[in-house]
Image 1 (cartoon, rainbow, N blue to C red):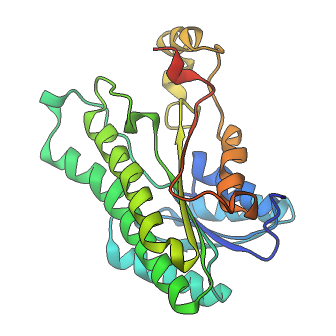
Image 2 (image 1 turned 180 degrees about the horizontal axis):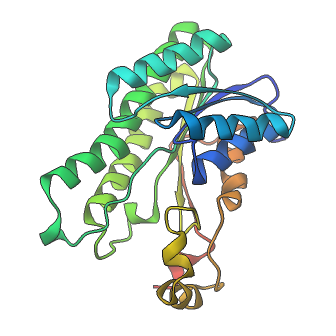
Image 3 (image 1 turned 135 degrees about the vertical axis):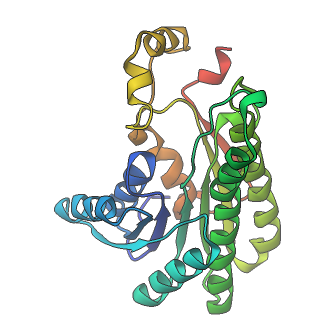
Amino acid sequence: MRFDLTGKKALVTGASSGIGQRMAECLAEAGATVVASARRADRLEQTVDRIQAAGGQAMSVVMDVSDVESIRQGIDTADKELGGLDILVNNAGILVDKPVLKTTPEDFDRAFATNVRGMFFASQAFAERAIAAKRGGSIVNVGSLGAWKPTRGLSVYGASKAAVHQLTKVFAQEWGRKGIRVNCIHPGYIHTEINDELIRSPTGKQLTQMLLRKRIGTPKDLDGALLLFASDAGDYLTGASLDADDGQSLTF
């Protein structure tokens, strides 16, 4: 089996930077036509430009995953523009890093609106169209080791990713007979612009030295997991979760 995605059409949420941007590039490199979606139109165009400069095919759709109507409009636009979507990557997410006693209702609602509600309704919109067209497809959710590994300060974030983990399995159950596979990647520490300051700080360097292989991952390190779940190479996988953490979870 190959990781070839030639002829496939994929939509990636949170594709304006970091992991989402790399995932969009990775899918395009494998032959897919990619729809990059996020809230920041200017940053989305940068993603599209990078893909096209490398010889890939891409377009952008502005979409706010905390707004259900925005999700439906964005996926509908992409679906009609490309004549159907084959792959959905639910990557958009936010981090709330606060102790329980300092977490506000606004923090809680914001995290769940993006990390859970957004992926739920994006998956729903994708599945509705795929089932109606009888074409099947693949949904790849981006979770976190925090889904099952408790970490101080990340109560709300971890709980939201645990919900993503559980919903992955429920979606796989409900849509398996319709030809839609649903799987989840749980990344470990990945160096992006969001955590760049922390990773480069003395605290970040100390953390790195504590890890099993003494290194922090990059978004590109998730390519293999993404392509396995998105392509026909993973045709026998649904409802599965993969810890893509370089053994980091074995450290603590």
